[in-house]
Length: 120
Image 1 (cartoon, rainbow, N blue to C red):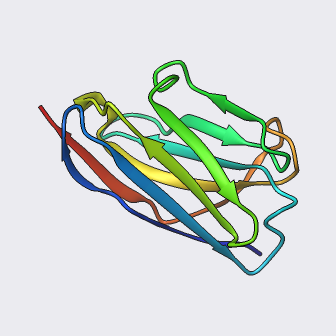
Image 2: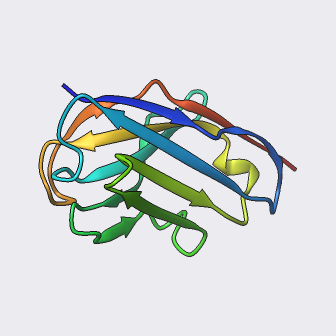
């Protein structure tokens, strides 16, 4: 069982930046792909980015070029650097630990989410 705790959300003006962190405990971290998802009010949860255990990254088209996912296996942590934020990025952002090593493995464990609000 892996526990995930997100932090770093907040209120920022359009064009600003935030860095989200995800602290993992209670299980294998380095052997899992990690991902970020988000859910805006009234919308379904959507995938944002994934990083494999080996460091391969994938991004949703809506964030490509603005967001960067990374991981530090020594700290059991994953990060999402968000630059050039837009009001449409406003959502609760969730950290996710995948079942396997690749970006194609299934989502398995979820954090409680952190709110990101971007004002225009």
